[in-house]
Length: 281
Length: 304
View 1 (cartoon, rainbow over the protein chains, first blue to last red):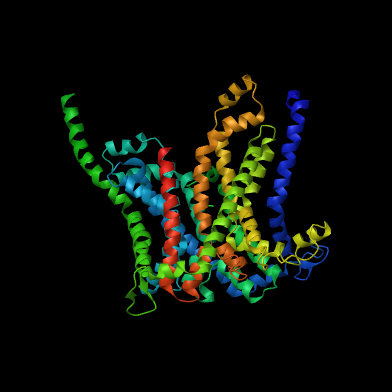
View 2: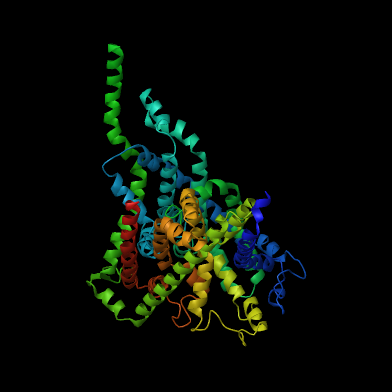
């Protein structure tokens, strides 16, 4: 199509590409700087004049993390907590979303307002009573403290995402099961759930991301180093060796890697559902 | 025919009766969690805020609104309110501008579709990072000996090593800058979806009328996107008002309260001073601010 780049559209095209390039530097430079700092020696990070690429490529920062069982433990904790939160959230959300999508009942709009407003309740406001509750339940400094409290911010998004997905499936599918004398339980798990796998994947990935990135509750409701999650682990690294920048950067890269991989795998499902109100900034 | 109709009718009756109770069975687990993790804690924090020495004292006494009045008498509380509002408004404005810019460029028909989808994935990246990592990145970049200072000095924009996060003059601005970088992707994705949903006919009709690009943006794009812009800006305002990890990790509210926001102010009262009652009263203030904006958000969503 020779018509595409007429003289009239050449300038706007060039300007748009220029704008996109500026945007790429704005977004990408800090991320690249983090990555390359993680493969530099600690002295090279502040060398003058500053250079993005390392003079001497080294993975010493990564090796020192893999050599330290305390740091490996941060990752195990994060995987356990985020994994359990994801499974429980997805199950509870599927059940609630089925009711929201397929039934009309008296408390529906009240519950719906409840779900939406839970998205906006400040975590700091909940933290103080949670601290009292977690101590009273005897689960302070355990996985249970984090798994239980994380559900307050994962559930609303999961319910909204799943309800949205179920609404896209035709009602005839599950009503055929009901009319044939099958139970709603069968209709949900045998018919709707297998068909909603893309929606479930998107919900699970997003739930995992929220749980993996959580900071405030993990900071306050756990105490000993062996119960800390990755974000708190990075913070501890910052306090202990304020100048081990390459280790902090390596830890940050490793801490973002699971999310990057999940995002790349589920990107297609994910972007479709990622609009205001269904996910969080 | 007659028999078939009776069979259908008898199997439909219990089905209809069941339908009344069935939904409650399915929402029961979620409802239980909301009671345990939302309603009960909110009632508790309200109760704490009216007591003296909640959690720490064995028999805390009821003091009415005393904790609120003590907070309102504290100049640091009002400083935190002002700084929270500055941080939040600047973040929302720039998130919107940057997100809109990226969305418009990515939506442009002049761009190669492959480049478009690669760039879209790359521009989303800041959204994936946890606040702690964003904090570390910007602490490294804005370190007095860091790369941004060396670039600015070599370009003669500044003539000394600026202490971005440890000077009371620059800390709040630098913090806001880091938060702007971290928060625009959600706007970009939401607005891009919104742009793709605008009917092409509107632009074609405008072309026939001889409208230029600016007119089309002003009279078609903006009005069409308005509902999306309002919901996302409201949500972002609510969430940014509650910011904690980024501030805690970069400045901890300092230097000398220069970056104190309501969350860090509250957190310090609870977990540095162990005055959970005072902390509860300022936590309730944040809650009231959030819920009043949530009211508008829900009203706006229902109007859609």
